[in-house]
Amino acid sequence: MEALCLSFEIQKDNPQSKQYGAKIANKMKECLSRDDFIEKLKKRYPFQSSKVIEDYRNFYGL
Image 1 (spheres, rainbow, N blue to C red):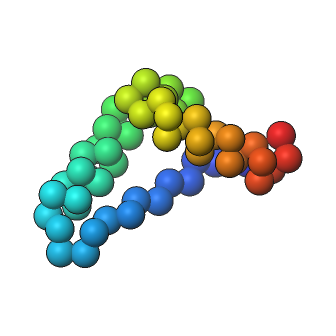
Image 2 (image 1 turned 30 degrees about the vertical axis):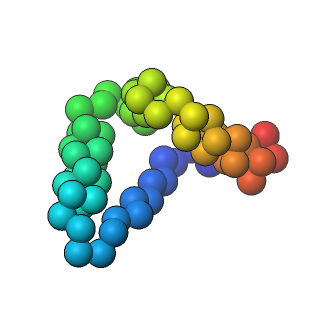
């Protein structure tokens, strides 16, 4: 529950999709903590972040 697990859905043979995934992975390196990264994602992708957090809480019964 304390880990941060991410998966990237990368389109096969799509250089732009691969570049975007690499960009996000590189941004992770700039973050000071897991929570810092999550806050940045929430600012950039508010709807998607809310959905992921809701799914996480439902899965873990929080």
